[in-house]
Length: 285
View 1: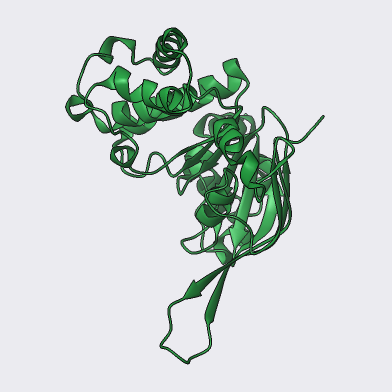
View 2: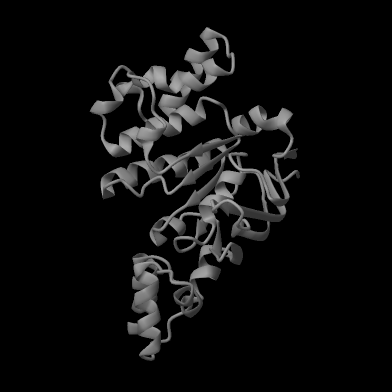
C-alpha cells in the first residue's frame, strides 16, 4: 500500500535576516526526519515549543518545501510545482485560529469557497457543502454569520471548508489551543468521526496529552528530530523520558506513575482514569 505521507532525510533551515556583508544565520527547524504514515492512520505529534512540529506539518501539504531531502503526499513530490494544487487538495490544513481560515460572511459560502476556487461545477459545490457541514454537525448553522458562532463551532466550519476539498488527509496544527473545554470536545469528536467513519488520515499536533491518547500512533519531536514513535501506551509508558523532553503525560498516567513509585504493582502505560480505577480494583481485590 502506498504511504499517505512519506518524508526522507527531511531538513528545513530558516534563514535569519542579517546586516549587509554579514554571513547568513541559519536555524535548523527540522533535522533529517524520516517518517511514513499509512492511509487511515491517526497520528498525534507532540513536542515542546520550538521542537519543529509545526514546521514539519507545513511540509506535509507543501506550505514549505525542504531545504534538503524529500516529502511525498500520496506519492507526489512536494517540490514538483505542477503537483502543488493536487497535494493541497489531498492534504488539507487546519490551523490554531479558525478566524484566519474563515473568509466569507455566511457559513455555507465559506465552506464552498475552496471548491469554487478550483473550478468545481456549481451544483457539485453545493453537494460538497451539504456533505461537509453534515460531517461536522454544522448544517443547522449554514445560513449564519461565522461571527455569531462559538470558537468550537468556528473550528468545525474551518474543518468543513477543508473537507469540501475532498482531502484524503487532514493536518491539524493545535486546532483546540484557543478553545474552551466544550469547544475542544466538539472538535475532537469531529476529528474522531472523520478518521473512524470516513477513513481520513489525521495528523494532530497538540499540547494536550489527553488528546494524544485518542491517536493510534504518537510521534514526539525534540530539536527538529523525531525522538519517539509508538502507540500511546508505548510512548506514555516512558514517563521519565517524556519529562526529560519537557512534556507532560495524561493525568491518569502521572498518578499511576507516582503510585508505582510508592510500591503499588501497577502496569506501565495506563492512559485513562477508567484504566487506573480498574487496575487499582484488582489490587484491592
